[in-house]
Image (tube, rainbow, N blue to C red; front, side, top):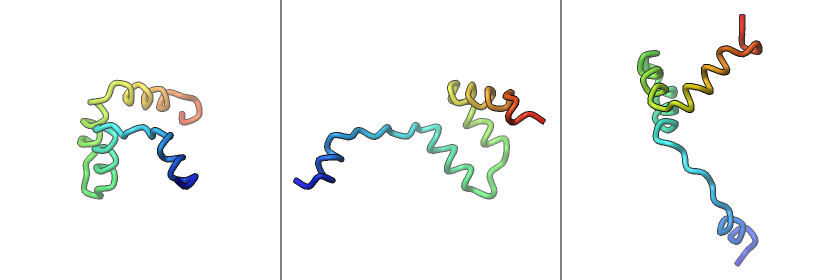
Length: 62
């Protein structure tokens, strides 16, 4: 077994959530509306909290 095979045999990569997958797909669609993105983000409370924290941070403030 090569070292690359043994590396991938021991590493467990996290799976992408259904919400994240839908959000990426929507953001790649040039015809997607802000409301579609909003509805997808609203399905994941943790993602919503992180985005609110970023929006309220001094780094991104006006």
